[in-house]
Image 1 (tube, rainbow, N blue to C red):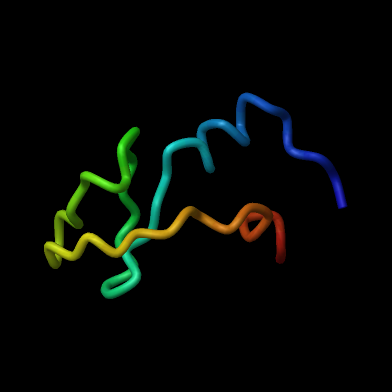
Image 2 (cartoon, helix red, strand yellow):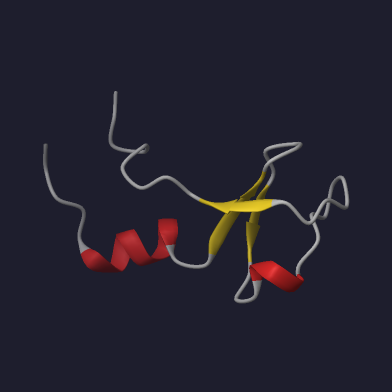
Length: 55
């Protein structure tokens, strides 16, 4: 599997979180203070790295 260049990896994974209730993607610096824009939940998890490269 090829390595992702660092500038692309930063754009895809840095400060990106997923809502655990509605699966919305949220880009934020402070996930513990942020609510989901769709459902209002505060349960966020980081994006799993490497999921974009699978085909």
